[in-house]
Amino acid sequence: MAIAFLIGRIILGLYWLEAAYNHTIKSAGMIGYAQSVGMKPGTAKLAVWGTGALALVGAVSIILGINPTGGILCLVIFLVGVSFKMHAYWKIADANQKMQQRINFQKNIALAAAILCLLAVSQPWVYSLGS
Image (cartoon, rainbow, N blue to C red; front, side, top):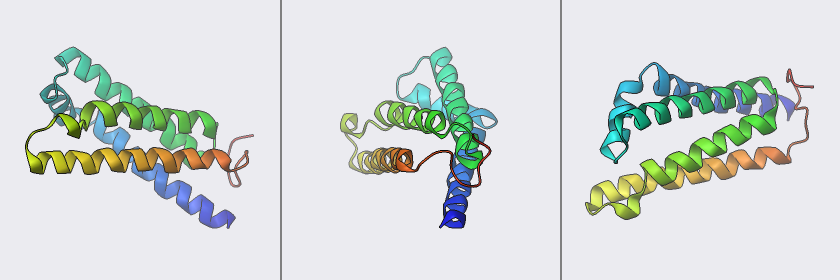
């Protein structure tokens, strides 16, 4: 089970590394989307880069097992903030867009719940650099 947990951590961490990459290196599209939901340009840029930093810290923490509680907190903050601001499906009139945003919202909330379950795993995690 220890190897399965490590493999799961690596896969989960890679997901968040990609999110961090998209929020930093490929930020232009995300900043534009943030502006399309009503954020001011400066605020949108700060939010995208800030969420990118949260994703990066969370990814490294999960993969390496360094301060898992802090990494989990970063990812939950990311997911809750993004979900309610960027995927507010209840504000959308178009049925197709509403459905798409509802799916994104629900996926993010489910990810937050799953990540919170990692808090039940005793620390330090096996095969981790954390102490």
